[in-house]
Length: 282
Image (cartoon, rainbow, N blue to C red; front, top):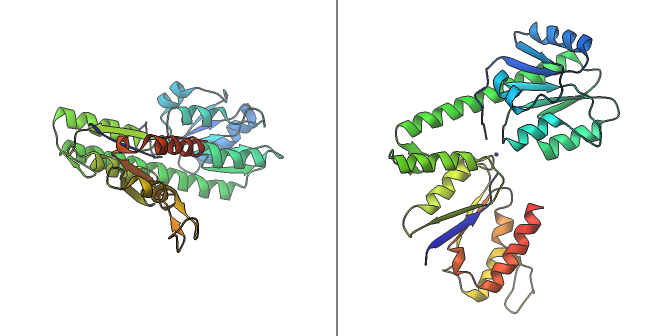
């Protein structure tokens, strides 16, 4: 039977940002121009756009290192720019400048949509400069990291994978696309083709690289122990449970869980696993 592995990840740099270019979104011409001049005085190339929903094509053409969105955030709509970037799996840092009374929305944008930072109007110029400098440094570091990975690919090395043939380069490209994502990934292939190496490479290139990588071979564990191995158990949960045991899901929290040879798992346990995945994805 073909071996199948499935696991969770987290997302990508899809653009090569111009190191000192800032895209400023401000619907008000006067305030936008004033902020543009201020940021330009710090040595940045500022592009002012009064359309606060410019679309991903304009953002791509502008090629900014950082986006500052000063549009009024409404509780119903949130930030259009964050939604656009998230849909395209872009990691361009976005700094939000929110109207008074919309701080909860801005915090939600940071936690759920990935905004880099937020300010409440009026903005302290000194604090904005510090945050902007850090955001640009982050964008530059990601760009350099991407270039280094490309250079390694050209030399036939990519994470734990080695090879410079056309099929290997295609695999590198797929790994690079999926690594920044939080989506579950299905890896298929015959025994010995390197599925676990691909899983580890995806983990190393993901935002979860500093967290645990936990791998479990579903065909090597008896059916009676598999549920406890995956989900753990509390002390006294069953005869012989002398102490609490953390399951693989708990151990891999925030990191990556590799379920090797998942097709060998009993059907009943696969159903329980599916329910767990649905809960996690929510």
